[in-house]
Image (cartoon, rainbow, N blue to C red; front, side):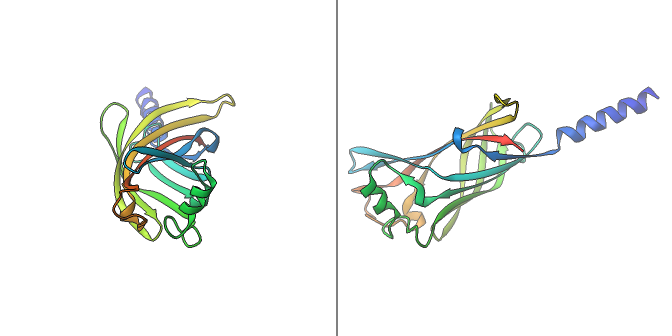
Length: 189
């Protein structure tokens, strides 16, 4: 009888540890930021103020996790209204035709410590490309309301020309590579 009971307990623990958990991005504790070199001597920083996302994990690790994020390109904010209007134009993001950027997971593999390699499809404007980025898993804890929250972050480069953002193709005035910094806190559903 003890063997049967122990077997049931181990089976239950095994099933619960691999149960799918759904998460949603908490925009109040998350940010989508970028940094691009200007004129070869300085940098322009910006962010996107509207975005959403979700994740599904198997248990409390990122092994086999799936992510999907969307960014409202019209919510670009560099702190300079004239520049933001230009970035929304056809010279850059062409928000009238392409109002969102998106990312969906292809795979995720554990690297070292709490690091992972996240592979997925990034869509900007009319171009979708496979990318691979490092992802740091901050862990899981409970917030002040007692809800479980998870933290992840990544930093990577994107060549804007690869996504048909062709303004100044020489990169002399506006660099080709954009540094992207994403910080997400996700709440368990």
